[in-house]
Image 1 (spheres, rainbow, N blue to C red):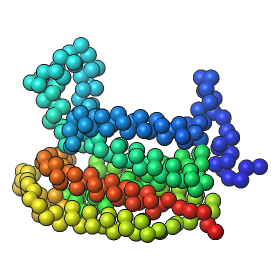
Image 2 (cartoon, rainbow, N blue to C red):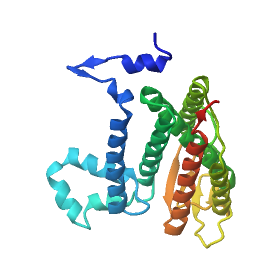
Image 3 (cartoon, rainbow, N blue to C red):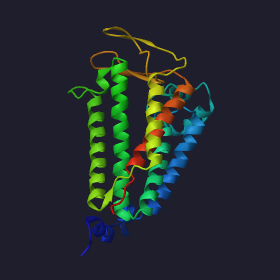
Image 4 (tube, one colour):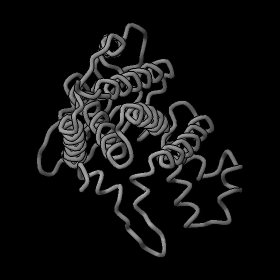
Length: 287
């Protein structure tokens, strides 16, 4: 008789097309290697396309491949082509390449550290995944709240019918619940929180980065956008390189403002927050 549900999962087989698919969740060493490959690929796109580049730029190329595959390469080589123009119009708008690099490396680190503490195979997979999703969900809730209040865009944090952002908020909430469940599983398997000195220092560093970002002491560009309610002006605190602005009852639009130093702070704050949160959730065996 196995000790836990995860011991049973580790012994299970799920055969399809002549292959056992259960190692996807139990062979975490192989999974870490695959995540590292994805991290390297995403880092390559990040370097190739620019510091503030986004996934959406690649989606334009993907669409062009399906629409007109033979003209894609010539268009990419032509700086004046419509494909290049469409690509660069999305620079800084959307999901940044820094995100999978940051989350991927942190997940690999967390999985390795958990493995050293006796959290292995499928238990390692489920708890690492749950904690990483929770960390992402918590960051998004904090960012949305600060952004919405400071810049007068409550739609980014409001749960209401007809608000497209509501689906995102529901997903973030679900991600947090998965993380809470993962922590409960670890607790029930004999693990507890351990706030060592380095974790307290990370918490302080995270707090200071948020303060610096909110009360950004250097120059930045404030933008004005015409909406159906009149001109909207970005706030004097918590500056962004990407602003989501509701310009009518049904339309929200993104606006990019290039500032690499500000984006560096953004990436640093998110990365330190992610690593700090993952570190706090790195539990130890109860004595």
